Picture 1 (spheres, rainbow, N blue to C red):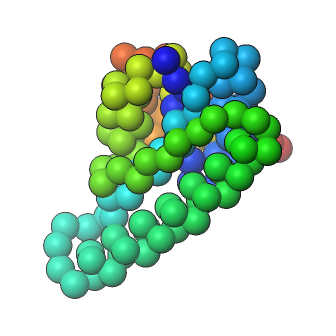
Picture 2 (cartoon, helix red, strand yellow):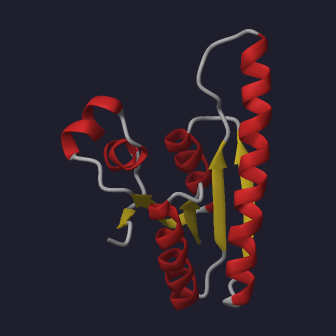
Length: 138
């Protein structure tokens, strides 16, 4: 089993990283840190440039998260997945036999999440694995 974390360096994700490390350590399981890199838009020149920028940001974010996990003594692996965040996390959870998916929230209203499709909202409705939503520190 494992603990899967959606990580993007947002305020909610920073706190979710700490919680995911605590859960992984408590169960002595590896932490799988996931970044979905599908760029918005459909095609064209801008898509390629945007996709590469998102991949670069993902690599940077994942590097930071791995350092924090290493400092805490938690084994970790990283995955940049060419999907939007929710499907990327569900896919990683299935492949790694996840005990839980951990994601951060940043205080959007439930209505906004339902209308715009926030990652935590999508996961709560689509995931067959338990989802732990960690609010950003206030």
